Image (cartoon, rainbow, N blue to C red):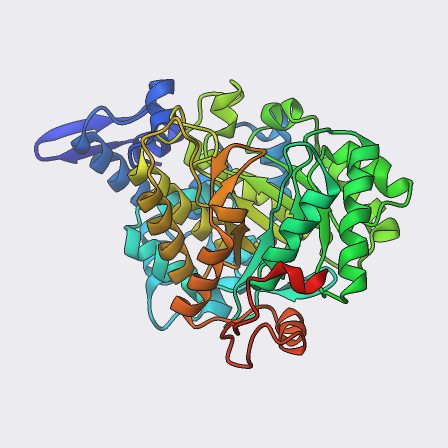
Length: 454
């Protein structure tokens, strides 16, 4: 493994593989905060050259955190398929990029090799790709999952209806859901972030939504995003949840800070198979995004893109229904401006798909960053072009509970029209039955009027 590069008469040397990975990263504020970023554009290019010459085996056998010392590393390596890994082991990262982008390499071939790669390998490939590379590569790959309904089929685009309430008022939440589903938002799930992380609040919200979708026979799934242990207790008490949600990250230390580990998530999955109001087999929903580890001091010196790749290697152990990327949610200490946020969304979407995950995107921003609405919309359209499975749907694009900006119900409808994609099949049939959408996926005059459900 060569750790130095001669570029324009100057030799650039790197301490180890983690140093190469960090310096090969496109500019990100979290890497600058950790003082691990390249100090010049030339050093960044030198790192990319060194990285492109390393093999899949180099990246796999030298993870940024030792196997013995980190559960996320173990999950990445233990979930490899050995015959597939051996078939790819000697390919350089440069050759891997060329293979992925070759127009003769089909999406099915890439999907077949999903368990040949760890998060470090996926991150390395992303670091030497351009914006168009990331879009072109990800667009080839699809991943279909089923909870109550099926999402991710080619030609479909789904949305989570996120009608949060600042007071967990169930009537407020259901009113927002009425408007959202009338626009065609909610086929991925109806997912509510509670203010109060209690079993009582989780159960009350789930029951309110369940009553609404049962009355109107809406084919979808319900999730309430309290802590995983709260949801497990709510399931034990009979709450009508379809799946279990949890935020995850790329180091054991960060997951520990979130109050989770692999054993707990496996227990939640087992419980969901017995108690959730869904047949599955995909019964978990993860959220993640670049920078969560550094924001809580659990990065252990690794760069945020590589840690995000490792998160996906951890997530695939549980066959989730949804993985939602929320790069942009934390703030300027992880992604400083729109350019960094857009790049991060494209990188994360590509890495998740390469590792076999059903990727959704949540291009978003908080009010204390340089990121603007234009940046957020550019990220949304680029990731839609790259074939993202689903997005959020927030009333007016402004989440009154989490206090951040996201895609609105109107944005959702525009995205489907721009990309020529329809809702998930079962939800589309329901919308046609209610006179809200035609068979071509065009909204009718009745769309957008939630009062039709009163």
